[in-house]
Image (cartoon, rainbow, N blue to C red):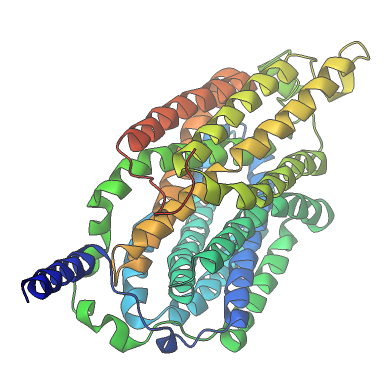
Length: 477
């Protein structure tokens, strides 16, 4: 009898402990999401990112031809991150209560409206003179600013709702979540990187009329969501938090594991934003002005627009390949280990690009004597990019794991993905633009090295406090 009492008491304590530490898992029969809906969600993200990046390229070339300052162009273009980072946590919280699909539908509507503003601005001011600050330049910049803020709002609607959709659809299936999260990140990176050569080609052939192509992409996105995606959230699932303040969506940032992780994620986003966005503009600066501004820098100016976009797009392709390889090894190691490997890859990329930048004055003056060195450095850069590509899926997996511990706030937690992406890229491009204005491509490399060091110490802190520990049964590294 006494033995039974002790056993019952132990069972009761075990049950109580499990209830306190393990978040309740929704029943799978509550989720009416098919695999087709998940695929449609990923394709929707891909279309939105391609449209947004093509718009960025078109606008970047349009402004870059008429404004000499990289920082002014970068700030105006990347201002859309302001609205993304402000609204993403709120939209994430709202989508937890109201459902994901309404916000996913509204995102391409906002994107099409924003693109219309940019097209109108380019039509009203086809040949602005950025060297003279007058009322026409003010109106142009305000119109571009309005368009980019609307585009940021579009992404702020899409990203948290889309990631919340993924977490809803993969509750209870760790393998499926790993595949879907990776697919989401691949779609995001593909849209951000591979759309650059597409945007460059569109700009080459039809100029700013390419904004009409972007508007068509948003229209296709709307139809995809309308007819091929089911809702993943029922009002009854989140009725408990339905009366909470929208500002409570921001409170998830105070969760310790999130708070200690964000510095590393922010700095890497700043780094990626500065490298991918500014490099395209810097490579395409026209000569001889570029050589006069910063002589003896191969990667500062002198490249054709389409060549510049192909170079950045090519490295983006290797980034995607690397992410595909990381899917195999990431579940077998601690997330901080993957992040350290990624930062080591970053160090390789910075050193090699620094050396490449000093090989010639411009692309037309590359001599045969330096080609062996160039051909040696390029594979090392590719290897570094493949290593660096492991950082982003590790980071997104970390956010997904944290969201599982906060029931009813999955959308709010995943909304921080957009906040980190927005703040990081906005700061990276703004400060990186200043670094380019001060030191050319070398200035961009110094800025990248500083960001890499900040991220390294943040990941080191996270690892030392075991905030990234894998679940029981996983291998460690």
